[in-house]
Length: 283
Ligand SMILES: NC(=O)c1ccc[n+]([C@@H]2O[C@H](COP(=O)([O-])OP(=O)(O)OC[C@H]3O[C@@H](n4cnc5c(N)ncnc54)[C@H](OP(=O)(O)O)[C@@H]3O)[C@@H](O)[C@H]2O)c1
Image 1 (cartoon, protein in one colour):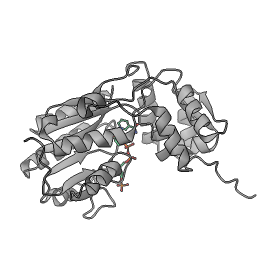
Image 2: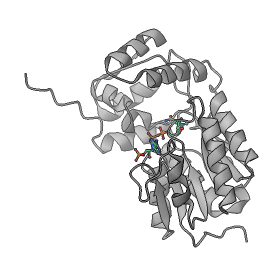
Image 3: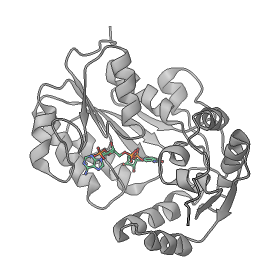
Image 4: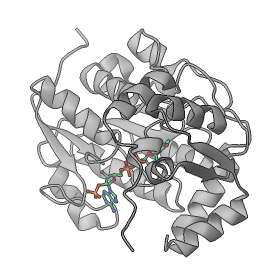
């Protein structure tokens, strides 16, 4: 029998983020104990402070590993060091969230594998939830989504699917050694994705393709820190060159079902009211 949920808590790094909190919800719903690893967790976990790593690994059975940004220089080494410590502390079973088509993220995968982890990689493309649970949400609320994404099609993946695969991997050893490329079922340009959202909310919302330079300048003006602007700009340039413009079969292989379609995501997110226009501030 491969399917044997562990009695020990599962550590969910990034457990308050877009995928991590969904993993926490699912494990908790199954009555499985969970420890959230983030700067707001107890004990506190900070990727940038190694003194916080040991305490979160204490007594844990397996871990979902989501770095706050696996594409920043040095993240691969950090992931490798964390994985080495986890293996040393008797927690070899790691499920790693990674980025599809990202060189730095793939370096991170290798570093975790080289540490001797019993690894499952969730190599994910852009999340649909970036439009509703990250800074693109404000663009949708403001009726104009201006991004340097051109007209390259992208098979946006639903974070609910990523969490379903993560929980399957955390509770069933048959997923050890697998690399799952996680995407949605179909390609959409950013213009098409925004049109789906526009239809779901019943309001005109436009996608405006801009240059990477204009994107970086606008982000810097809004006070986004320089290294974040740089990272985002290079990410758009790197992964939206067409390399990811094909759906993959990771969700089907891991779960035996089709991934959720973007239209379902847009309908459900719209129903929560998350895209209501921003209140106009009184002068
Ligand atoms: N978004 C996408 O489309 C996408 C696609 C593919 C891959 N990825 C990769 O997935 C990973 C997560 O991205 P996301 O967009 O899901 O992130 P997210 O929703 O913003 O969540 C980030 C999580 O990391 C925690 N965190 C932030 N800084 C931390 C620190 N210094 N130490 C410990 N925890 C910290 C946050 O919690 P606290 O604030 O409580 O610490 C939060 O739980 C990244 O590596 C990203 O590159 C993202």
